[in-house]
Image 1 (cartoon, rainbow, N blue to C red):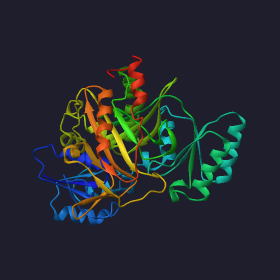
Image 2: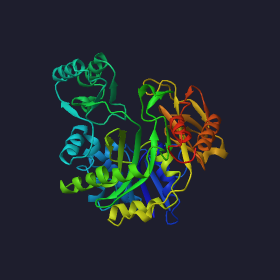
Image 3: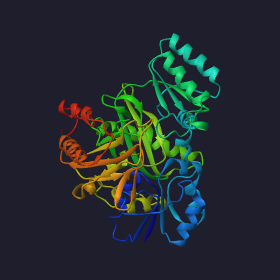
Image 4: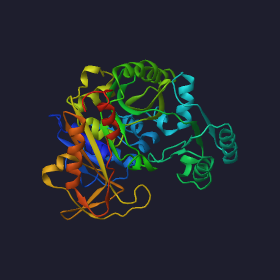
Amino acid sequence: MNLLVIGGGGREHAIVRAIRKNPNVDRVFCIPGNDGMPEATPFPIDVMDTQRQITFAQTEHVDFVIVSPDDPLVAGAADAFRDAGFQTFGPSKQAAQLEGSKAFAKAFMQRHHIPTAAYEVFDDAQAAYAYVEDEARAGHLPLVVKADGLALGKGVTIAETLEEAKEAIHRLMEEGQFGDSGREVVIEEFLEGPEVTVLSLTDGHTVVPLLSSMDHKRAYDGDEGPNTGGMGVIAPNPYYTDEIAARCMEEIFTPTLNGMAEEGAPFTGCLYFGLMLTQDGPKVIEYNCRFGDPEAQAVLALLESDLLTALQATTDGTLSPEMVRFADGASCCVILASDGYPLHYEKNLEITIPRDVADKVYAAGIRKKGSTLYTNGGRVVGVVETAPTLEEAINAAYQTAARVTFANKVFRRDIGQRALRVLRAGKGGKA
């Protein structure tokens, strides 16, 4: 089989490595890919140029397509590939609205009684200012201000003060920090509790949750600094007990799947549930319409069953829970970034990845010139280690991360520490 993966970061590297394990795979193409991904053949076609990608797939006799990133999915890339006759993993444009528009997602949850934070939507900055002023007077701080559209995981501000809320509205709606994505904003109540990410496969009528995980979004230790695309992940998440998983299936996962089908937009592909475990029970913070990044790196590292078989079953309506199995133990992913990420950072810095740890390193932003690798993004690589216990996985990940070198390398030093404290307190599995 010839496979095509659309995308080019650490998430796509994790997907490529996992599907490569299927013995029926001959070639894997990745558009655009990156030079740190030796398991796939990269081609420099723009990730949004779906028509050129289809022409390429026809020329190379591709048998199966995986559309991975949010932007092309929201733009309808999976539909276009299917219309061209390709078996394609990824939701329709209509279904991808769950991520493409937070206003759509919130209204959808309200219609189908899916627990989430209270909210209001604004397309007028002055009305948004007046609302946060009223909320501040009523003592309803912090508030969460979100760009309605896609913003590379950075369009969310937790405003502790009225001034911070107003500044977030100004950046999004008046300065246009994220262009059209921020012309409309969602302002939510602030939810408290542990966060959990659950990636799931769904063929439109069956949903199969994958291993739970805990992302670390803030740039600096102690959950300080700006939101990023993710600075590290551990899996499984010790807060996500069997009891909570059962509640999520009954109150969130199944109603989401059924609701999309009822509205004529059945969701097929990977549906990402970003959850907050509040005192009132689990609530949805956000949906994503694809594998998380870097969550996919930590979760797929523990996958024992064949990913490609599960993805194919997802596309043809034959998915079942028995198709997905995970190893015991835990995983830890530490992101190595360029200093200044997610704001301003330098590229083209020489990077060294020792050969004996290359299979633990997932390339997010790497280019090659001759035989030398250089950084080519804010998040450069993810380093993933698995072990029988979370503590061992964390220690191994940091030991391996120390051996990957480039100038201005930065990383969080506390990935997984909150989860370890939970485990040591006896509230989860093995530390």
